[in-house]
Image (cartoon, rainbow, N blue to C red; front, side, top):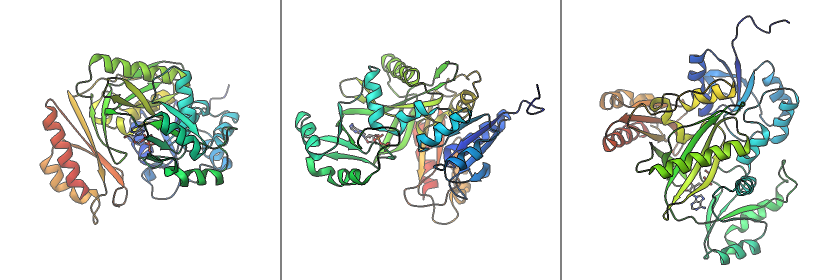
Length: 391
Ligand code: ADP
């Protein structure tokens, strides 16, 4: 039998050129894994590893990109099912595979599947008209959260409604939309109870194709305007019960849906002490960025290991507390690096992750992580460093 290569070097193809692909690069370099990125455009965050620029919705482009790689994985969840299935049919190892990814691509499918699996979710319904939304509002105290099932991120596509007419524009847009490429069902919106939550938690796990799963500690994720702003690892005052319940839920999702690679489960901790699943992400996730500096194995290294079906690394914390703060915007001139002299001098324990993006108001351009024994001090260091970088 002819060996394909003289060495055992493995090659991973990442579809999407954003910051998640970028943060896989150092992990790949350390493991001696070749990494190739199919970026959407020149100059994206993962440009340093972008071997191709092209449209991830185009089957031929993606098949050509995947030629010669050992496994394909993703920076985002938007690759159409038809493209994913073409990859699988061509014999490419795709992680996570299309059958899992569909539940991260469509919030209605996700809610249906989690309900089938008996996992705790907010009260929800699939609605196709303002009249159906009105019925849901009447049955649920006159207030609800409406979501577009596809393409939402960072709170876009999420709206609190109090009247059946409050989502008229989205229902109108549905009528014009083509049916989901993965479903025969008519296009619909997701409506949910407005959950009375104390805080939001996130539980990440990684699962190998052969079935092994490991979990990181559950973390608290602080959202501002629907966007993750800060993460505290581990989640403060997470009673043993909450952390066990969170990891049990994430294991059940990973197994029930057949995820391979990293899975992040976003959870609501309700005021009456229940955990409800909000969202699933089947890739490294913002709530796991702390693990680069704060865990024995970062989510990016773990994702590569899982995708290559290698044994998974330990997931313990390096510090008593890790706090990650996102950097939004960035200075108008000189980028984040222009702030390094002051930031590095004032915050020598803080680690910076600069996504190499141009500054723009509200844009996620990087994050910082601080670690240590005293939570208050760690929070202060991370927030102060992020604030210096952001302006
Ligand atoms: P995205 O896909 O944009 O991240 P999410 O479904 O995660 O959207 O919602 C974004 C944020 O909106 C959540 O982090 C949470 O703060 C709030 N949210 C979402 N669903 C509900 C709900 N059912 N009840 C209360 N708040 C919600």
